[in-house]
Amino acid sequence: MMYADDLTLSQVLLRDTSLTRDQLESAVEAQRVEGGLLAEVLRQQRMIPEEELLRAQAVYLGLEYISKLEPDEVDTELLEELPINYAKTHLVMPLYRESGAVKVVLADPNALHAVDDLRTMLGAEVSPSLATTDNVLELINKVYARQTAAVDLEENEEFQGDSEELVDIIDSTDEAPIIRWVNSLIFQAVKERASDIHIEPGEREVVVRYRIDGVLYESRRANRNYASSIAARVKIMAGLNIAEKRLPQDGRIRRRIAGKDIDMRVATAPTARGERITIRLLDKTAVLLDLAEIGFSQDHLKSMNELIRRPHGILLVTGPTGSGKTTTLYAALSAINNADKNILTVEDPVEYQIEGISQVQVNPKIDLTFASGLRSFLRHDPDVIMVGEIRDKETAEIAVQASLTGHLVFSTLHTNDAATAVTRLVEMEVEPFLVASSVVGMLAQRLVRKVCPECMKPKPPTEADLVALGMSREEFTELGGQTFGFKDTKRPPPPAGTAYHAEGCASCLGTGYTGRIGIYELLMMTDMVRAMVVKDTDANVIKKRAVEEEGMRTLRIDGTRKVIAGMTTIEEVMRVTQEDAL
Image (cartoon, rainbow, N blue to C red; front, side, top):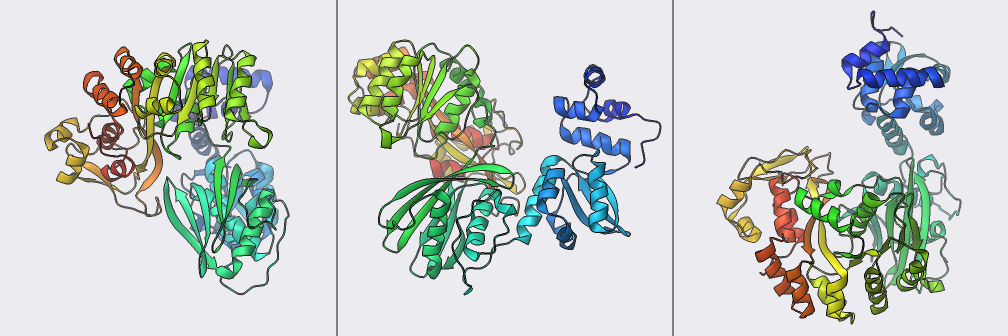
């Protein structure tokens, strides 16, 4: 390795990275006390991003830094002598032969033992380069996944079931076609960020569809003859009874997939053409987002922060299944989760585990329901309670009583807008005056797909678009270029008077969208709203007056703001919202 002429690593760091002199002195002092290398201290204390640190080390050591690794450039013949477990443990990967040496990429420039091992394994000199941990891991997963690609189940191959537990699906060397096909199915779903896998038997074929960013896409097909074997394999993985094909069953699979801990909820249902299987994927390693990151504008964020810090009351989040209600509640809990709060939750299921919060999963088989869990919580001196969903009169009444006796309660309801939450509680036989006294805010929400930054193109809205959005072209143009205090500013606003259109490219799998963000309708329980609730006023009237007199934004209006800010498209907002008949 050739070191940068007359420069120490400290000098390179100060010159080329965001590290300040005070931070450097702090790191040097920590190195003096604890020992080790300066770079390791900076990495552990996260004083600067890993990419900046590696770029500086590359300059100092005279190595190449690679910002983007392409799986197509890897010579797969080099992998024959390198087990995937070694590559992932030491974060090393051979790329290709160059001038008599093998170019390899490392995530740790000090892993000299790994360079020596590769030199021996490959029988050639090694030319090291650097890349971030995430990029090296992603390359390893992609390349080895191609090496163990699934067989085509339309071929007539011999196969048999196997109930062996997998450590990591990519590491599996099982040759049974059905097992490899199901493993590949799950791995591909994780790779494409799918939230659900639907395995549906048809008359001639088994059709597999993935739900990605809330929309279903067909992924693959298999011969109809394999339907029962595929169902049996999934049932074995989920611990279900493979002999029972007449009744619905529910189970759970936990696997490590490409280094991620994935929890899968499995549901089977007997249909006229065989057993249908739905697999819900939950990434346990996913980072919980805060309220600002999930799409709240500055004014909504201010109101939400006020609501979640009240000493008592009920905050209701409403919307259909899959609209991100639980994610919003988790973000709210994370915002107030500290040592002086006793927070308890009862959920179905516990999707993400949060340190410092006691979370209970309902189990109807032993009569552990939302109502019984909530009733028990009141004996544990809680400050904040989260109830996964208010489904019945008993749960609603206990939630109301809890709020009236000094507890802050978060929960969800299945309604289309915020004002209808009041009607829903009254339908559960909760007295209107109790609803008015206990509920402090109602938040309706939907998820819209974010336009792909690689292929988005400006496009003026049509007259039909403007009519649907409820504004004139002049109003739309006047709002152009505003950001409204959104935290997601990765996509610049489109030119005034235009909106982004999703073209579709390889980066977004041809969909035109990557990821999702929330749109919101926040109805505060003000004196005016409270008076109408006590009188059992119709929800549409409450909504209309809240919009006209208190400036409440409907879902479609909030979605329009995100269109103008360049975060999504008009078509996407139309897809998930209904016209506001005010």
